[in-house]
Image (cartoon, rainbow, N blue to C red; front, side):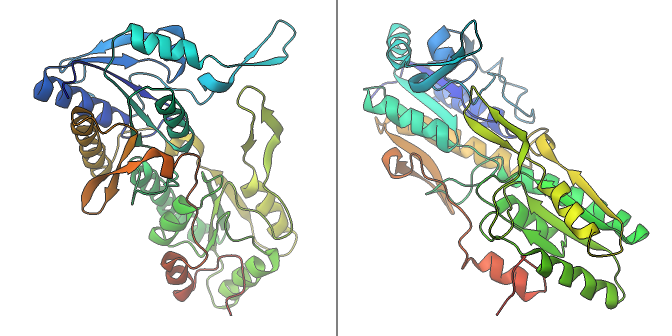
Length: 367
């Protein structure tokens, strides 16, 4: 089919590489198909409010190395369950999906490119079911999407976390301290696991393996008794103690998003460790530093490949699919096979076996 006018939006949390995808979609559509490209602002909210801008090869010329997204994004704008406050600060939930579809058609778009993670792609699939021609592009620093080897943004987040560990190694060794680095990873521990291995962490804690504090203390004491009185701990924000739950930051729940805000496992661990061993303990929370900044070369290339292939899929009329990395190729995966699914680290993962084989403690006893 001929694509004459397309729309593109970025949904969910930001990450490095979003602009690389926007640039690739824009340039591929204009250069290869002489199509007009409309950038929808602030995620799916732009489909409701009508906020948009035309994208050109000139306006996207210098964004390849730029972090974030020039279109803006939000993880609170689900048109099917749009949450907003009334005058008394009560949360009201509305279904604005018909209005979003109406705008899509009013703008005479041939395709909607949804760049996002599990939540955004689930919304994209719902729009596809309502008759909107959708192509998904996988984005999340957590790398927790099914059916793709990697999501863009992940390798950059891993590199940022690894760089932080490198720095904590030197200061921890200098002061004989236990250094804890808390990174993102609500349900999936991919960042903590890969960055922990790459950065030489001695203990890695991920959501998939509940830890026992006595196993962590045992590892720290073994290192101290062996002449290495410092230890480096990498902890995903969703890591939890066996028999316990995740640490919710300030017991707060984002009322508009309806999802608890995690954070604090690093400080909780520090207090547990201080009670049982005579060493100084320091905690660093990396937070949104993992999301920002210029993407690595890997994510620039992956984002460009995904964006270009997405345009070709649209031109072939293959809607209702997500473009995915199936190394070494970019392939299409039906959105229905992945919408709403989260890929966690399997307990039998070779990465976990590798970590434990070289002496990294995962918070459990290895039989």
